[in-house]
Length: 105
Image (cartoon, rainbow, N blue to C red; front, side, top):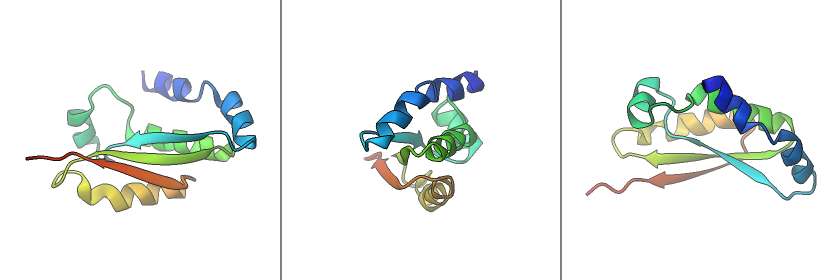
């Protein structure tokens, strides 16, 4: 199933590459956490961070501008991972990052 997600995420690689040549596209991949135990609880049945990082790397290797969306950030649970996620994605070619913080009352 995770391999299917990887292939599905890259199914339009040829089209994205053509658009990237014209500066017409940028792709963002969401990463909530690098910790599998947290991901399994927050986003069960989704692709692992490792698979998402592989997609970032593959897109970047094909000269597609790629960024990461760190979301949702949950204060006290995942907020401390922001620097690590940025470091990991930058090492794989991500050029930008965004985030969404969950506001807990």
